[in-house]
Amino acid sequence: MLAFALAKRTHAPRATGLFENGIIRDTPVATLLYTMGDPPNLFKATFCGDMISVMSLLQQGRVNVGFLGAAEVDRFGNLNTTWGCRNGQAVRLPGSGGACDIACLSQRTVAILAHDPQRLVARVGHITSPGNGEGGAWRRAQGLPARSGPSAIITTMGVLRFGEDGEAFLASIHPGISVDEVLSKTGWPLRVAEYLKVTPEPSEGELSVIREIDPTHFWTKT
Amino acid sequence: MTGAVPSKLISMRQAIAEHVPSGSSVLMGAELEQMIPFSAGHELIRQGRRDLTLVGPISDILFDQMIGAGCVARVMAAWVGNASSGVGYCFRRAVEKAIPNAIETVDYTNFTLAMALHAAALGVPFLPTYAALGSDLLKSNVNLREFTSPVNEDRLIAVRALHPDVAIMPVQRADTFGNSHLWGNLGVAIDGARASRRVIVVAEEIVPPDVIASDPNRTLIPGFLVAAVVHEPWGAHPAPVQGYYGRDHAFFAEYHEQSRKLEDFERWLEHWVLKVPSRADYLKQLGDNRVGALKVHEHALSAPADFGF
Image (cartoon, each protein chain N blue to C red):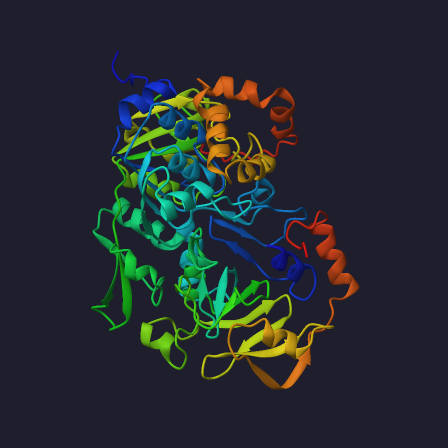
């Protein structure tokens, strides 16, 4: 929700936001949303209808990018929000919601999560939302649309992108973070881009938009 | 008098007693984070229902409360937890430790649950989708089955039709026959009402039939599908009802803290459900300040639509 609002007010003023509860918006909400069903998200929306009328556009391939959070992501970009593991004990997580649908059907997906070795694991214990599966042509073999698949994993330490073989690599690191730190906090031997970039710092303008929308740091706590 | 239709208006207590026996499958939370029938769920808890199958896309903390109260044998949902803070502790205790009882989970995605209800609403045994291909949900949910399209060889998922016994549907306004106006994000409400064998409408306001008939496009649940109408203002709190009251974010955060430990949850349940005989008493307990702060402060009426000829 924050990413959409930021994009609208910076580089993508003509973007449209689609929410699986049945809301489509051309204008981002100026106030903090805790959930996509908060009343301000319906006020002056472009469209309010049912879930199928939004998800059908996703299935048609008309949604460019889907944003996802996750408890765990693996080297092939598969996401797990169903069964976690804490101190060797299985932990039941809330489940897919719309994440699996978005991972299957949008043109590309961006996953956002905190960078720690419990979250970036070699193989997720449960594929809630498919990324590149086991790599290679796995997605096509499952029957998933050719246009779809993971595009980036944005963490608190860097940005991972995906190679032709479907495996994630470190494409850029955030300012002040070392490659060794990233590698030690990743649950598999993470490949590093030949020309590793440093993630550009957010501009003053971008920061002011984020701070305006989320003044209490509900979504942006560190 | 010909043409007069009998009123279906009854109390929440009576509606739950007559229409939702133990063992029922019950659709709740069809509009996702909006319009969750908390007062109906609390009445189910107070009447001691057991072995319910809960059906709904995300449900927010209502399913968590009903699981913690021991009402539930099975959950068919895409997501169970607390939309403000993630985890649902009662859901976790039930799945991981069988406290207060073991429950079966049938995991869907939002879209596949919508398709299951849409198939039932259409009267067909299944509908195809590309969603959930490659997901491990296919390993545990037998209602999602891969097949090959007979027209183009694509692999698809057949989502089996799902007919809940009862749908409990909060709406903004209804007449006493059950013709209902609802608006906002609709989630799976329209299909959910049509897919279910019975519908209980829970209305913020009861209005004359002429008000409903003035805007038939907004009548998303036709009264002949409705078994009972309950007039229950603030029946969805802490969830919001567009045009009536906002979301009580603090309530969700407080529940998160107060359900973390089993004994704390039991106290919460006693305080907010078991000792509270009705929704009116619940509102008294909530207090005028809190209720006042959640009221709509700036109304935003839509332009009227002209049905003249």
